[in-house]
Length: 219
Image 1 (cartoon, helix red, strand yellow):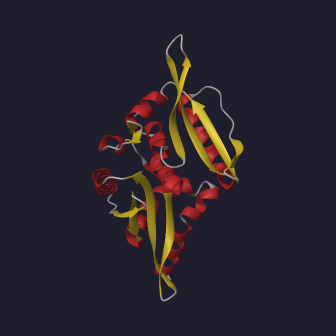
Image 2: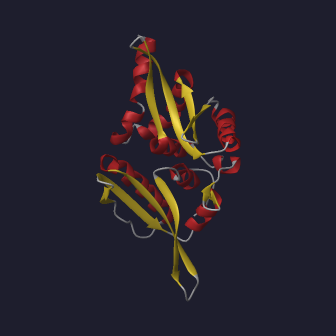
Image 3: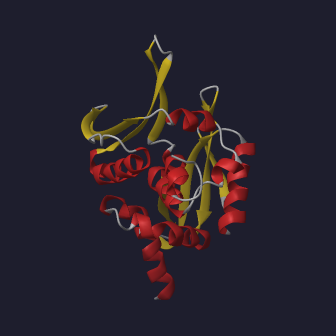
């Protein structure tokens, strides 16, 4: 296992957001002072294909037994969950959290490749139409960060501009910040993640509004 270029580092960091958790399970052996760490993916039952996709990636990194994606009752709604434990997840946990709070740095973001961006977007991104007088004239693309400081969100904005030439703005909702961009920048972003998103049937809805916008602009 290594944290570096390619999907080894990118996938775990792209996934470590609202729909994924890297948790400390507590000491499982008092004799050897051993603490277990796990990564958990939880989604709606409609996205089970996507959970399996992420499960396969995690298993390709850590090896060992391939745990099954299980169906669950998620607060009264059909859901699915995958969990994988591995000692190296301690490294991920320590990189991503400080005092049990998510913490992002530019060095961490630099691990992301296009596949990592795609996973981040599929986990925490969405597109919606912009309408004027009832007619669609563009889209808004948004990515949740779950961050509550402008300093950290600015690190992400600078990263996207410098690494991918994509200009994001900021939206604050319920004390947390999200990235946001409109049609021109959204098209650039989707062109990067589309090769991965389009291969997962249940996630194609995340990019279909951008495709429709292309049709409008070219019609």
